[in-house]
Amino acid sequence: MNIPKVVLFANTDWYLYNFRLSFARKLRDEGFEVVLLSPPGEYGPKLEALGFRWHPVPMARRSLNPLREAALLAWLARFLFRERPALVHAFTIKSAVYGSLASRIAGVPARVNAVAGMGYVFTSRDLKARALRPLVVCAMRLALGGRGSALILQNSDDLEFFRTSKLVDESILRLIRSSGVSLTRFQMRPDTPVDDHKPLRVLLAARLLRDKGIDEYISAARALKGENRTVEFLLAGLPDDGNPASVEKAVVESWVEAGLVKWLGHVDDMPKLLSEIDVMVLPSYREGLPKSLIEAAACGVPLVTTSAPGCREVVTRNGVDGLAVPVRDSVALADAIRLLDDDRPLGRKLGLAARNRVLQEFDERIVIDKTLSVYFELLPSRSAAFDRGPAEVLNTSKHP
Image (cartoon, rainbow, N blue to C red):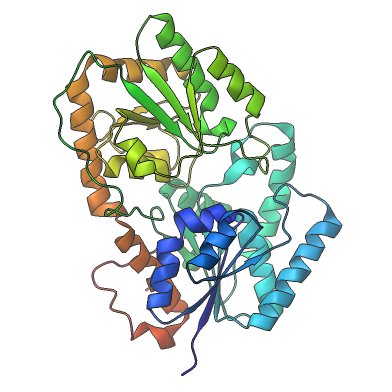
């Protein structure tokens, strides 16, 4: 029997390992041959150790060199021509653009692109981002549409952006909220008595990028420590040298030296860390749908985030399933953390409501089934082997 081959292409091996490993396993269980592509990194060998074919891609995420970018496109086209996959699934804007163009050149019949947030070019206010924006829009318009393609978005704001900007035909748009969370790995914390005298432990877990709201988080820490509160501010994550919005390591170390934050660096065991904190904070400017928030919510941790696109898909009702503050507002962020420091029972109530939303909408099994539904739209010969059940992907087309 001819085994269909699927290529999953991301801009980091870390992303494939942490965000798409369960999906890759499900594809393999469904009878697909799975090939993973990303720039080289420490997680590539880990993927290979799990039995996947992983290939390093000569891709520099920050490169603007036309010759280097042309060489990358040529490399991808040659690779896909040799592999002859039935479908290429690319994640993030740059991978989606290059993966789609290379797939067309190589004659790949089906393309799925997942844009989880609009990235630096669309969220940053700096001159470089604004200069790149029209070029990226043009590239997206050229690459992402066409017959045999689908574009998966994670939140309603991004969906509306693609609808109104006419970047692609509306019929290819799909809305699948998040990459999902494993409810066997991220479980509800033990129900312990509320201790009003224990220091409140607050965590921000993300790549250390300015547009994650890192500066606002540090400003809130400075304000609350100035009130002689015992709130403990934790920061998990590393700078991302491939992103222009990255916070420099020396800056993070200066915050640590000033006693504003405890920097944990990269954390492998997030379930353990989430069992030890009281509040998860993400004051981001824009997201696809932040996994750190739904992982924390799965553990019953109360959430404080912004009313930004993506974030408001998780905290949908301020004061009910979390606390939402305006973007770039460190004062409001400090107010929200102060409220949870003063009212510990409120935090428990918000955490329980957040977990209930995860159970209903963000269980990775639901997300995986919806994503497979998109595959089987494009590969109808495989659809009969998979019972999609009640989890149907949202087709945003006006036509049946």
